[in-house]
Every structure is written in C-alpha cells, then in structure tokens.
Image (cartoon, rainbow, N blue to C red; front, side, top):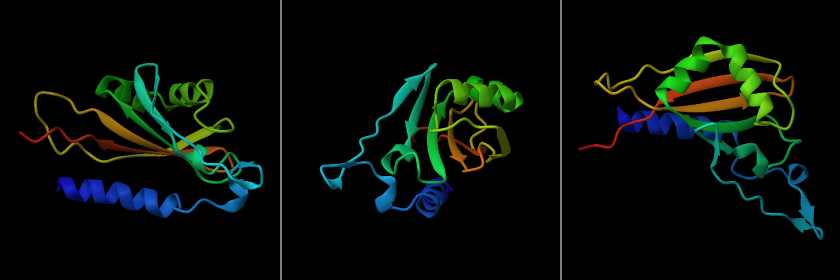
Length: 142
C-alpha cells in the first residue's frame, strides 16, 4: 500500500512535469541552457519546493510541492480562499492564483493517535486555476 502511494505520486509528477525541460521555458546564459537549482524553502513553518522554476515562468502547468503539518493542512482545507491568499502572498507561482479547486485528498491510511503530516501538490494552470492534491505522509516503519 505504501509503495502504491509513492508510485502514484511519482507517476503524477512524471506525467504532468516532463523530465526534459522545454527549450523555450529555460532561461539562457551565454547561448547555453542555464541549469535551474531548486531547494526546499521554509514558508510560515511549512516546507515548499517550487518545481516550476526548473522550466521557467513561461512553462505550464506550474507545480509546487508543500510539506505541511496536520494543523496547517486542516486550516487551509477548511478555508481554500485563505490558502489562495497564502499562496499568492508567498509567490508560489509566477502569477497569482484566482481560484482553487478541485481539492483532492487521499484518506490517511494510518489512523493512529498521531495525525499525519501532509504532502500537497499544487498544480497551477495558465488560466490561474490551482488544483490541490493532498497525500498523507507515511510514518517511518518501526
């Protein structure tokens, strides 16, 4: 089951984010391709990875990945407009998001006493619509 979740996420990223960047979407230095470097950033206590920066601001869809606590996830899941404002204020994409939806959540497979942290995949389209998929992070096996 755990392998299936990881495989599903990787398949989603491979389908939506081509492994080979488009020539026109990457900034150039001295006529050669510039290598974009992306790193996890901490934004308001959550980890954020802006994958779209590899291909540049003119490539669509743009993808950002977030690792959030259960409390943060619940806060934004209950108020998507507040989440859109948070995304726009922190410049998660090259241009502002206007609407968010659908918001797709895979139920937590581990219903222990501890609530899971979440991995959010934010997909931003050219028409400024954002789709959010939420996967519970798997706990380390004992």
